[in-house]
Amino acid sequence: MLKVKISILEDRSYSFLIFPPSTGFILMLVKSKIADFIAVKKKGQIFIISLRNIIQLAKFKFPDMDLRNSLPVILGSTNSCKIKINVRS
Image (cartoon, helix red, strand yellow):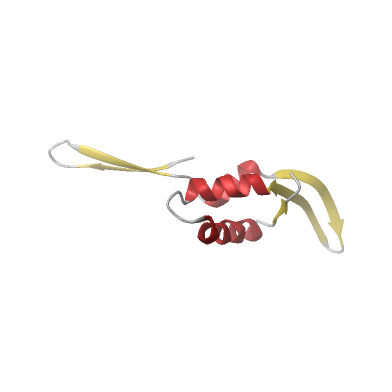
């Protein structure tokens, strides 16, 4: 899903801006479910994402930033979405 902002002026001219999807939205599309778990008083699922997908997402979301600066932002989003990173693929 893309966010779009459309501005229409009185003279019937218009402009629009297209914003990229949020990091959380992209993570939800890319994650893979590996297991369901039932712990004490908790039900849940375990999701993973490959390190390669993390790097691609960082390059997509922040094309003008260095990877050393953009990766912590993506890793923070991954952590808040409770997605584990698979470094072997």
